[in-house]
Length: 480
Ligand SMILES: Cc1cc2nc3c(=O)[nH]c(=O)nc-3n(C[C@H](O)[C@H](O)[C@H](O)COP(=O)(O)OP(=O)(O)OC[C@H]3O[C@@H](n4cnc5c(N)ncnc54)[C@H](O)[C@@H]3O)c2cc1C
Image (cartoon, rainbow, N blue to C red; front, side, top):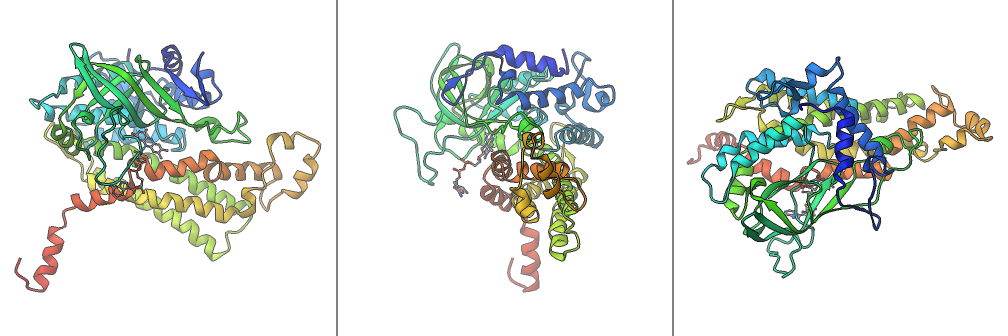
């Protein structure tokens, strides 16, 4: 089969009839026609469509080592630096197509799965571990261009250090049994972005817990019996691209995943009941390197777009002459160039791992993933500070089509734009930073890859600090 097109993605998702709940109702009919999902599904379909566009085909696909068919390039296991760079160029094309606003463009999870499969051998001969199932899922995903959501965390019940869930009825999804067909899971997991809008869901134990019953990893088709996706409220403001330029195309939805005695067939289990193997796998696999590589590439493209919006605002109301405005725009430029430099350094320092896979250097990517959750909310604030009342003086598309148009044209004109263009620009800035969609984007960039506080602890713990301590030790001539 190989790389799919947009129509194939939509047909597959419609046919699944996954159990998705929104606002008290189970969704029936074609998910691709539902107002909460259709914009994002169309956007995602347009990414798959690019794989068949003669202008991009060579940059977005590569010949499958198995079938020879063109398959998605985010599945490529890079064995040279050139291949690593080809991967990044592929991710840039998809990110540019969505201005970096689709957090879960399919290359994110494809890269994660590629990385897990590349490191699967480290689970060889470990108790209750089936590395061959990760490899076969990877191959199937690559050949059929499957899309994935994922859930890596447990429900936010009690995050104190010493909490151990002991309720009889599981809250966090746990293994409640096993039989000749597989393991049985009951409970909930958070937080599957695009849950129900992908072919499969990847469930992974990412460490930090002591309950063996939670230490499992597997992948299941989204329509598996007993699996339920519970949506938050939709942040699609409406269908009008004029009124809601971003949410009408990019609202991804986040879901709580509930397992009601779900049977995970043995051939889909990666590991279970083995905390040591699970912890080791998460730390040693190339998951962080390749997932961060995709994330930082997307965030750079998003920052270029945000800088463009800020500059458009400045130009529209002619405030570029003020030093504090220049300083604010410089802050954005510094953020953008810092992220670019870190990405370049990660590629520069890439090395082949024990499986011959060319991993980007992790430390610069870890630094970037600590920088962005801090600078993104500041970018949002800068746009709000530049836009001021313009961020709320926002008549709608219908206002411009009504008899008050003359008033709008006169009173909402701007230094360099007519009223309609000015409102379009400010609506874009509002949807990025103040609408429910925009506010969720901020929360997403803060948290989607984990708690920024714990990400910085991880950086501190993994950073080689000894040689710097030695410098100070030598200076003072202390005993080592
Ligand atoms: C928009 C959005 C989309 C997401 N999409 C996905 C997805 O698709 N798949 C997925 O698996 N996850 C997803 N996530 C979840 C994300 O992985 C988590 O938000 C992140 O790991 C933090 O966990 P938490 O939200 O449970 O916060 P908590 O762990 O509950 O933290 C709450 C507060 O307590 C503090 N805290 C808690 N524990 C500690 C500790 N041990 N040490 C220090 N401080 C602590 C935190 O710093 C924070 O201030 C998404 C999150 C968001 C916001």
